[in-house]
Image (cartoon, rainbow, N blue to C red):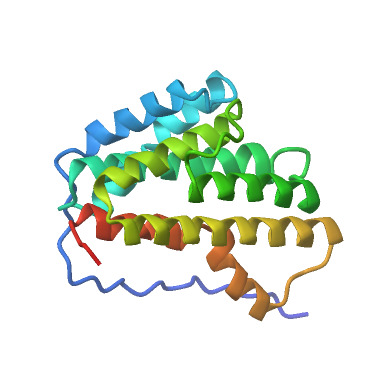
Length: 204
């Protein structure tokens, strides 16, 4: 019997025509993001607080948009922190994730609140109120079109979360085609990328 010979995988160099730069306010928005999370009590415990503090989500934002305006970069940092915390608390680690029916009803109410911030809904819910805070802060820097485009993309994210919960509950494995389509939604990628245009001062 011939022994199995494993050959190391050679990862090719990643071509990137852009020089590495970070926003000069990177550390400031990183600290601001942690303070924002503390204000809304988004940490489950001290252990999770340390996890987010060491994650330095603000660096991810500051390195991604080095020339961005500080205000929108702070809102983007808060949103990315919200996504990670919400996903851990509600979607993934909560006894295997929330059931799709209850999750759909809950996210529908949050979506309604984002579309019309004056609607008196979920005022005691820390996840809804912290996301509403992001929505209101975004409106200070974004055009109405940009703000509502972000709301639409967050709703797409919610759709992806419900799909993910349904797949988890059924025990089925999603097809490659379905996964590629829905991962764009459940990963919240587009709603996070929306901040690039706003931070860059674009007005489309």
